[in-house]
Image 1 (cartoon, one colour):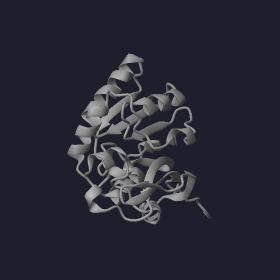
Image 2 (spheres, rainbow, N blue to C red):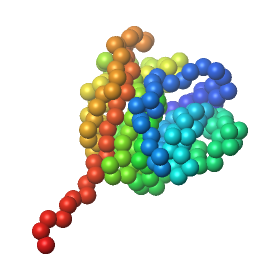
Image 3 (tube, rainbow, N blue to C red):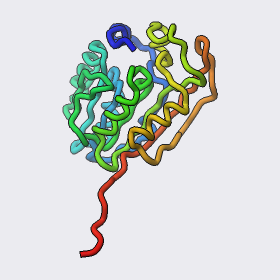
Image 4 (cartoon, rainbow, N blue to C red):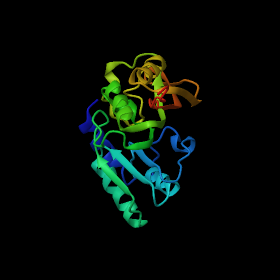
Amino acid sequence: MDYSSINLRYSELANTECCLSCGGALNFSEVKPGEICVDLGSGRGTDVLRMVEKAGEKGFAYGIDISDGMLETARANAQKFGVTNVKFIRSELEKLDLPDKTADLVVSNCTINHAADKSAAWSEIFRILKKGGRFVVSDIYSTSPVPEEYRNDPVAVAECWAGSVTREEYLKTLSDAGFQSITILEESKPYPKGKVEVSSFTVAGERPDTKSCCCGS
């Protein structure tokens, strides 16, 4: 996936009224007071502001995006509403600019399908989550492999299916990254896009808390 073309495409859309999301991951996330949250593909920052409102004054929210235009708009929106416990960062999904074990919660809407290396992206999500932390992600998968001709097609990229993989491959990537309690919260029927069919779904999972009890003396 060509990140430069994504940056250009989404920067152009930063100040339009179109909807770029394929799902409502935040609706399932149950943000708790004081939590540190991360939104991958934060766009104009709407979900970041909603998360930090729920997390409260002791919470914090990071927005991650590759589009300069979206980041500029998001920062302006945070300033407009006087929200200071947020930060918007330009970063690729495969190398997130956040320390290890930062977040209690990671959410994302129709973004991870853009990653050229999805295994690396999910490993990064695992890395930045605290032990016992969780993710809720809405994304798109394909019922068969997407032909190469669509990988950098601007329409397919904007519609968030150009980089989609099959359901089986998607779930295996989550498991291979180390996540547990993987649950599909909602899932659409397949619908046609180009020469394939795709489905949108929302999936949740947890980074296991590997702390072991102390037995014996």
